[in-house]
Length: 246
Length: 324
Image (cartoon, rainbow over all chains, first blue to last red; front, side, top):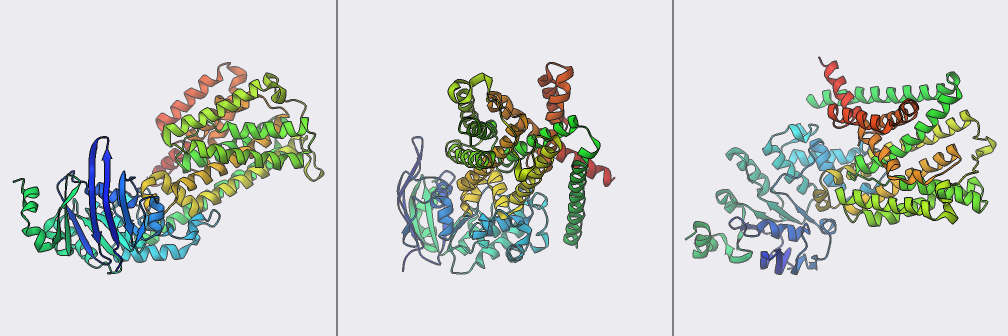
């Protein structure tokens, strides 16, 4: 079976400082993969390289058997890639449903329509509300993003990604900064993502994240140092070394 | 519950807005019947400035790309039309589409260069490109007559109606303005317009959502160039004369000041802003020699009290007053 994501010897340096120093990893289709590592390990850089937010220096990125490292971010999105951001990156002036509508528009021809009023595309808003329903925010659909809570914004982040029915979804610390109850509900949301979507997740909250993932990759100084199943990784002394600073 | 109330409020807002536009249009249609030639001509000039500012607003307000070189499109369309008419003897009905098409094509090329950057870099590139044209207009005397400008032009006579009459020209300019503002309103209210505003607010996110951010900006750049060119044709028809000053930094800056003072990213903003700039320029300059100083002062006052411009500022005041 073709892997959802296959990365080979991926390198990226900022100035002389390597952020990813030859990362190779493979994620099977339908898998839930957790990526952990201390601050500065290159986790978010890795996501930025996969989406094309950043250009790689060398190495290859294959999505579903196709090399994508030379494609632009929007071309990768059209091949089924979606992501969320660790730092909320949404449209603060607009309503929640408009935020989701912009995501839905990204993959439709209607985005080039320069004459029909946006409000006339009612199906777009019906779909946007359905997505918001899925993340439990239907009641806030018409509210501007600026007035909803941080936890709700986190859900909108996820809603934007889910709206595109991605084949490969990258979640960058979806639980960061949330209360215990909020973490529980987001965790449920992630657990409910259908298996057609392959999920790669960066997360620090090990208690929550470990339940969600089958495989774990540990990054340290831009390299993969441990990879395996949950129990293998937890039992590996290198994991302890990195996390406990032995 | 709250959603329904919100929608109802938006509905009455929209009605009020449409009534204001309708009122303005009726007042403008009535103007020639109550005002003399001086005011008719002056309002024609305001209308031309409005189209120019509205086209610039596509870049500044909706794309978030501050341009300091928009006079390039007004000037080049005006020069082309004048040159085709004077030097090649091409009739207006032929010269106008050629000038529009050629200027839009120039916008397409300039867009390739200017959109290498955003923000300050974009500002400097648009300024540099327009300064090249300004210098060319001054120096390429065999084509542009340099500092003398191109003289001896006539106004066209579409469908046999000569635009030499101030009222006829006024209604022609008004018709073009209405069409321009309507199409621009449709443009920014469309899905493409929503995407455009998205690229202004979160370009990286838009890219990751599958939007071709560069292409969206380029299309808008070309569209803004087209309406800039349209204002240039009206400009040269009105004055029957074109001088390098129309391509100058001052000319671009006047447009930009109009957009920002009126409220960038709003439809009414450039209309109000351009009118204020024109009124100051025409009235005050007959009393005070340094009218630019007063324009600068007015601009500073507006920006201090209403940082996002008059239209959003007044709207806020109105909302506060009506909910008191």
